[in-house]
Length: 223
Image (cartoon, rainbow, N blue to C red; front, side, top):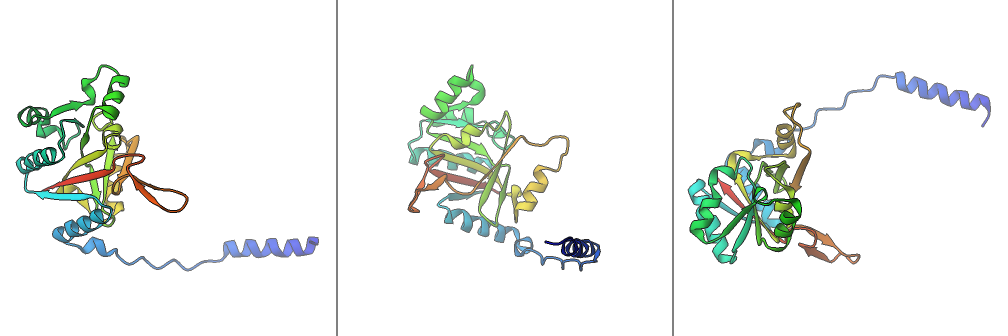
């Protein structure tokens, strides 16, 4: 390339950078944003079910615990691990477990991490957690991990049961992430999005569920 040709190209690039470009037109509003509460529930249920998740809807905390008892009987669950997040804590599932004949464990019950890991991988039949948020457009639940929401409880047992208050169901991802990152002084160190059971595929495209996490997921929608 000659020096003159190079100079011509550079001048064109400089002029292009200075040229005013027309602003992009505003994006049309997402259709999910106009859905009613019941339509959001329907959309979430449809998308969650497509990922082979199982959804139950109950009126209140009492019905939620009754539904959990029904699930433990049907699944023959004798030992579960629970989180202590703001959704789960008010349920007093430790007391509920004594009445229901289910051993209920928490991460804080173990003296060290090795004992906790051994229990959650080898002795626990299901993990029960709250869901911080859920997204109707994809059937996704969202968990913010901290000392009250240990990540292993939702990924190590073969069955994950999530309690979801209906006011935490949002139309689209942006609604959920805006809430998660609203407090600039308290950013979560780990935020997990769960869309159906764990799934992977082999080189021929054959799909397998539960290879790297729960093979089944149940959501109890409260409200």
